[in-house]
Length: 581
Image (cartoon, rainbow, N blue to C red; front, side):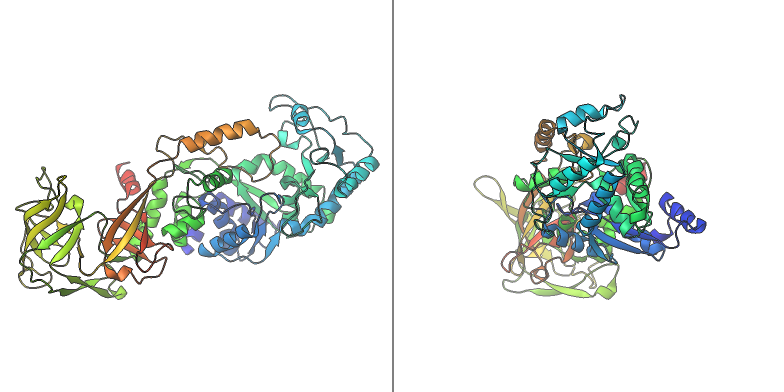
């Protein structure tokens, strides 16, 4: 926490200037997610900055759910978002909803109509698109723009009363259809929508648009700094316009500051696309460990501390960039390396028989839980005549540089003995089914004589007579490596607000292209064996499976079959990239 707080960034410099100048006497922020899906890693930058800014300057941060679109929102997402925020280690001062301010929004709307700042428009979406103009050509006024305010007020009230069909009328702000900023060309304030709201029920059939409701909510809560991602920079003049023209009806004067959003390689961060993955059964749900949602990362074994470390490392800037997913994995790996208990697990097993070990006899060995943290204690494992090792650790005929098990070679079994491979057995297809070895009983680790040097490697193993059968789920990126993230996930910057210019056919085409680029090898399931200590561990327990990776026990686990998700591999490709840079 303190390390993050000590870092300087342009947002905190602006906050300090505002406090020094007397513009604000204290700091208040808000985190305003829309409850229409589960939060993903792309939301973390805004979330952490909102809460951390308030924390740094002794202020408070509200959690405000932007529930202006009842067609997509649900209490399920509200609960999930709260859980994610707590997982990241933050606590909100108050919980609010955009719907708390529906009456105030309506009051302001009627006031604007009377003052000639708003009008009821009857252009269709297609017609308004034509009237709006382009980025290089000005728009033109709607034929309904100059209707008398009394007529607009009557129509607006009848819109609220439910007299008109959806899409037939819209309340618009009257700003400037020739503005070089296309956002300022008479943006919509209210649309008709016959959807029952999950909080307000059937009270409303007109709903405020995001660009209108959001600044009102900020000002109603006396937010000082409205921190948001860079795609809202073009919306800032509209944000300020709404606050300025409502100032006699609102207590606060918030300031909007933008920063670059978070983009990750081989990751999609569009709620629309993520929902398509879930509904199309391409993944098992919002918490499928391949998903970039926070609930999925938590299930996979990521910690809130690791995610916060990642956001701290990438920092804040005004320029968009794409961060290598390996950097996030490096943060997770560093966090787990310091905390995870070490155990042995074999994911692709082949049996080893120690021919000179007495049948039925076992040896109890004590092993440390963590090589760097003796305070984490020890646990015991048993060693016997029959063991499991990784199939890749044996070759019938060795290749150059191979130092693991092969006929005639000696290897050390981790924490136990030196063994020599004598022979092996195959099935009818030539697959190795059993390896026969001789154990040197004078080489038990930690005893006199155990220091005998050999050329072979040290291998991990599991006692076949005393082990837990496990299922291991190994994950790779959801998108193929040749995917252009900006093309595959064009809505990484989506505002989660209705977009009047959206082309349905284009959206469907992009969605099909996105599905085509999914990685078919994003999940591999293996059945293997692990030390019995993992059997009784609760869901969410994390381990380093020696030489294999970091794993987290999954809620799908049963007493008969514990299930483990590979959180991250042992190899740190990001650190290697940095070293070679």
